[in-house]
Length: 293
Image (cartoon, rainbow, N blue to C red; front, side, top):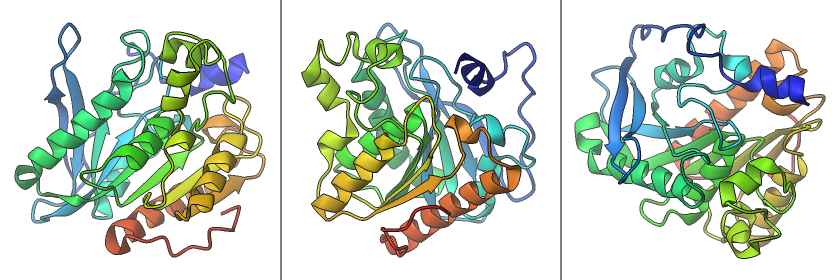
């Protein structure tokens, strides 16, 4: 498990590749401040925007992983790092703007600071949507691992605007299911020591009938965040009458470790197709009972 954690971590800045230039038809704005928090660093986001002539583009709000302890906003996970063009450029080329958002890590502040930051980013994006050429009525939250947890919370607790959908890759949904060090650092105490905060931080506790469509994709062999998390959230959503599409990926560990490149591509393509469908129709047309890709 420790070897997998080492693989998942983004490369150290001393050796990490420099940000690539935007491909034709895509604009990038890096390091845009979206909030100031007293006593903390300014919070920033990167924007990947479709062609300059595009107006009112739907938006993907992307949240990175890293066990709430580390991670970078420009990283969709270890299996997408070699891609050229990268995943955010691909999403923008498909006509969706992407906002890759910073949030305070657990070494900087405990929950609910992280979801407060994500909500602040959404508020800023709505406020500046006219200047940016994005449509605040068509927003999909997309997150991986810890970012998937926050994307789930945002989709379930945001009243204005109501999100169009959520794409969740191997995200924790019930902090009581995996009461390890990352969860304790996030909450400031173990889930058993502060059950009220653990419940408030758990997406399963916020499910409602009018939740937006969810796509939950999880490796069956995930050793860091068991697939029971996505199964539990999908079951709770369906019980409430909300649309949930659960896709379990055979032989996949956390971060899509252990599966071939073409299967990772299939996960991404399925996720992008879901996001496009969500912003166009507001509904998930896939059979919610299916698993696999």
